Image 1 (cartoon, rainbow, N blue to C red):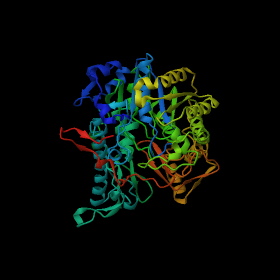
Image 2: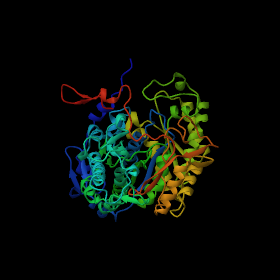
Image 3: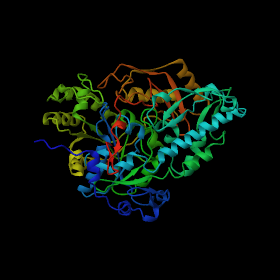
Image 4: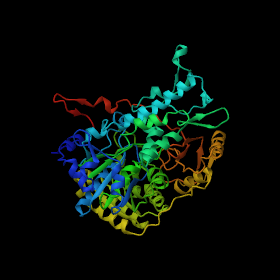
Length: 567
């Protein structure tokens, strides 16, 4: 008889959490640095950054992955499992991850607390509101939007060209009906009519600012630098000029403090910020890392999507700002994803896996291994030692795991099979040992490009060296925008290329690691406050929609007032 595996929510409720003061003590944080927020969560005061600064530095590990399939490959689960596993080999670790967006939680993704016995708890709080940071970002962003429209209504002293206003509104809900709309309709006192729309809160530049700020004052300066549009002479108009940045900072004053939680096995977890992984850098906050880097032997953080996206941005945007350099990187791979990258299978989120995908076929693993090879190479481009984590599923075959090990060994990389979903930290001990060894190797960390390179050189460097493109083509509008940014003094900023996460190319249908293709740049936008330029390559949805049967249909309260259906 088959025994059903417990749900993530059931497992999370079986956890035996310790008092947060004990969890903080593992990191060297005194109770005076904590601000309790109900049960199981606390804010960490920013004074912790300075207080811990003189302590030994932990080994810094970033967890990335091969190009994901629509089902996800368990990167957060692996991050949590690895953090837990270090205690099994006598090491102290802290985990730093992004806060989940409630849009995807109620959409198709479900929660983002990890999975199985490698989760962050309290799972319900993590996935639903937490300490209100998302709402603070929403409020600060929309305050600026209101100030812009009020400025237009009150006479437009700054001469803003209303058709050149780039600042939209945000909401932490998947709602396709809000993507494009007209504001200011009605009577004259209702405002100036203009076309606008909504993005999801995670796509807000305020969220990117939160993640990349190093202090409250730094956040204040960054919010002031946000460009909301242009005047008739093509000069940028900022939040500072609109006198909105101060009030935005006040709204964000509590949100800049990281949130302290714990794993199923009582490993400290800092959860902070949740920038969109397509148009932003897709990494948790610098402030959390500045605290966690002095909180034990290892700091394990996660970068969004594959190594061509989240890890590249971690290296070239986040590390450039924080001054922290990684000691090792994990590339998560699953058998099903590698087989998908053979190009022989079609995987659709929410639908059963193709039966052929589950059949034993190490040759297909080797075929799809081209993507793994490229992503390992992408880690090495930055002078960091890679470790391949084989996130094992029950339907895998030993010969297929052996195939992944062969690929890793051919690249001179370590590999480890992980069963942390089912067995928690114990299931990731081999991975922890491999990462600890890799982190002891000398590193030669380097950025892909200098600040002084032109924006075009930066784009082309990432496209050719990381994505494997043969070159870059710019639409006329994109070329003009790049020229304008250079003229306005933004050319020293790093680039964050917005493309599909489902392929290492700009075409989501292309699997593996294609070469000889050209990256099309159709538009370029500037996140000056956050501190990067983002070229747009393809159709980027910044406000997701709900599917036919979203997770919201299953989430409810039972007769005992307990949440059900959250996954």
